[in-house]
Length: 411
Image 1 (cartoon, rainbow, N blue to C red):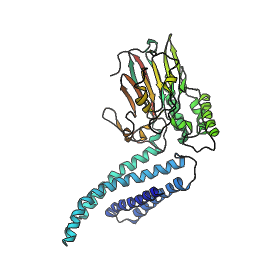
Image 2: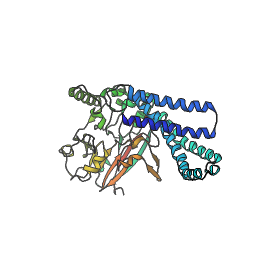
Image 3: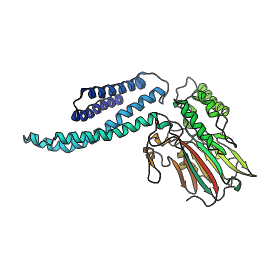
């Protein structure tokens, strides 16, 4: 409760402080009313959804997700105003104190013209995250991108030269609110005409039932060599307060059944072989293993018990921290690992060849795209869906297409 009190106190201070910038540049009372009305509406909805609306879910529900999202829309711009005006106040404060005690109030360091100019700069800068966050909520979360990679391996079986894999991850079907956009994305996946489709976990947010309205849609996914999947941390129902262990177990079994019904072969600490032209590659799938408090059900030794050390191996593991902590130093060589989980934090800046940044990099070293360490490759998919913040800014929903080529290895 103390943390909430401190948060609301800070929010009110931030509101008041940011309001000073509007007072400096305009005396229009309609603008004042709109400012306080929107601020009160967003905060009131947040309080209702997060604190007063009972829910057994530990993570955000649909309504709570939007309450949190719109709070960010108004909170982040005001933080920008706080920083810009705060810097000026910090510079002016010592001189103001000095002039006050010297009775030189006319030279206190306050110049209305400069303050008005800085207020306009602050509001202009704040408009950038305000517009970006709104775009992310209403458009960005469904701005699907197809990212294509060609990866070379000297020991790739010749029959698989040119083999195409489509990877999707982190569907989070419980967050969807636009069927037309999801239908479009499924069609986009099918248009890639890959040999196989691999899904690397988090089909739902919490409950197997979240996927029921989308079974027919995702059941339309097709690939000639089949569709394969693993579980992610959200698929186990760990973020729900269950009435009994039996209910939780049933939820997981229901999700496994749904995956089977839509055509996915779920690989749990096990392996399968993809065969072509008398040759094969091993497809290995582990249950979720994540660093820190995340579930550690993945068992790599069990997963490879049916394959040989010299088999060409593709590993599906939801959390990239598993690759960093366990896979890279495993006695077996895993040619390619496919992961997801990070979502790229659904926020960042990516300009190919120039900038690739997201705050998630402070938690995950390998957080989006292709990486190579110790001769082994990983692709961290940015995610198909979204969770928590109901949008994406700069880190767009991803469909990955990987073409395997036989030849000199990637640098």
